[in-house]
Length: 225
Image (cartoon, rainbow, N blue to C red; front, side):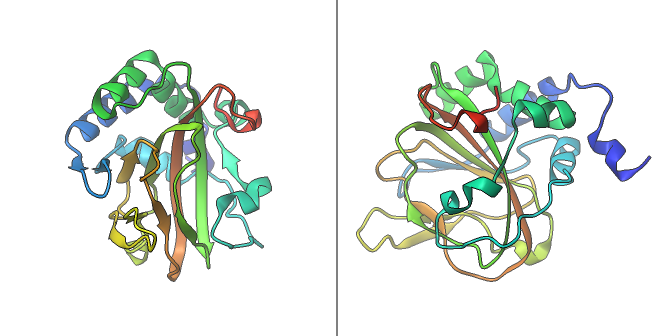
């Protein structure tokens, strides 16, 4: 079997194991209340799917402008669009699992996120070099935020998302553990300060950013459906 044969599976229909595994992960997550409610995940996805997602052949972007904001490089960002779902069945499986009514209901039950009418947006991130993110809160049209970490390189163990308090200085409270198939969930609000302080990234910091966004989301090309 060639390397690409693992991504180009001839059949899909693998959404149910993804949903089942994720439900277990969230039920067993480390739920934190300070400085805001957030959940630290372990084994978020079936190992096979997590490895397949990590191995997707999207080239890591180069010549990026790192000014503390992802939107500065909008033209180079990668999403699980319908085209990518047709090309890579594992992307379609992931979208099917997270776009269904049962998953939305479960997320609402567990986190309180209001996902009625929200649209799914999944970004595939590969951060390198001098990438950093200033402390920020997500814009109000984001109704739910989850990060799933996809690199298993021990050199990236310090590369989790930073959680800050809501003071004017935005003091670092803790850094989410960066572990393969782990992650972080929060429901965006005025106090959900997070970012990624400047540090050496020794490798490629791969992650998924999963958002449910308002129906009036402007950049429709980013959406999963």
